[in-house]
Image (cartoon, rainbow, N blue to C red; front, side):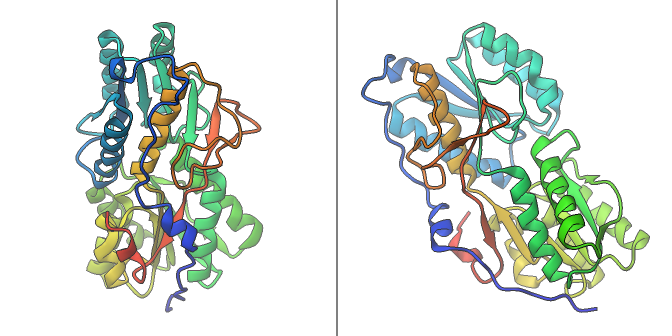
Length: 339
C-alpha cells in the first residue's frame, strides 16, 4: 500500500511561537533582589538536542532577569539519578528547582522535602504531579495526542494497524499522548487499531531502531508508528530507510528538526509535532520567579512568551497550567524551525 501524504497545517501564529521571545525582568513589585536568587532547571537527561535547546531558554532567562539560572541533568534518563540531583540542590539551598521529570511519582518525596525547605518547585510534562507548586504545560496533553492521531490516521488512509512508542512508561506526558491518540482512534477512526501496549525506547534512538525492526517482523502489515520521545522518530525513521518502507509506513511523533530533519527529507518520517523547549524552559522559570516573589498565578496570565501569553489553569488540577504552543512540521516547513 502507499501512504497518503497530507500538507502541513501550521498557522502563522504557531510559527511565531517557535521564535525565542525575550523575557522581561522581574516585576517592578518584586520583593526579592534578582541577583540574590538561584534557580536550577533539572532535565530528563543531557546531551540530546531537545534539552540543549531548552538550555538556550535558561541562558536567555538568566540574561534578561538577572537571576542566576542554570540547567543540569544526568547522563541518562534514570529516575534515580534525577532524584539524587534534586537532593543535591536541596542541600545547596537554591531558591527554585524546575524539573522535567522522568518519573513524576519517583520525585514526589524529594519534591516534598524541597518545598518543606522553602524551595519553590515547578515542573513541566508532569500534569498530575502532587508535590509541586506549579506545573506548566505547553498544551493539554490529551488534545496533543488527539492531534497526532488525526494526522496519523489521515496518512494511513483511516485504516490499518499502528504501534506507539514512549520514552518510558513512567513518563506521564508520553503516556497521555499515546492514550489521547488511542482514544481518538477508537472514537473517530475505528479501523485504525493499535497492535499492543506502548513500547519503551528508554529515550534512546538505537533502542527505538531495534524495536522497530522487531515490530515489522511481528506485524508486517503495520501502517503507522507514533513516537513520543524526541529521539523515537529518528530511530524509527532509520529502520524505515533500512527496510525500504519510507513510502509504506506512516511515521509521526514528537521531535525537533535537528533530530528528525533528515528523515523528514527522505520521507522515512512524515511529520513531527513539538513545542519550543527553549520557551518551555523560560516558562518554568518565569512561573518560579513569580512564586518566589510572592505573586499569585491566575488564568489568563501572560508570561511574555509566545504560546504562553494566555495561560489557563486546569479545571481538574489547580497546580497545572496550560499554554497553547504546539506546532506541526513536515519536510516543507522544517527549515522554518532551525533547532
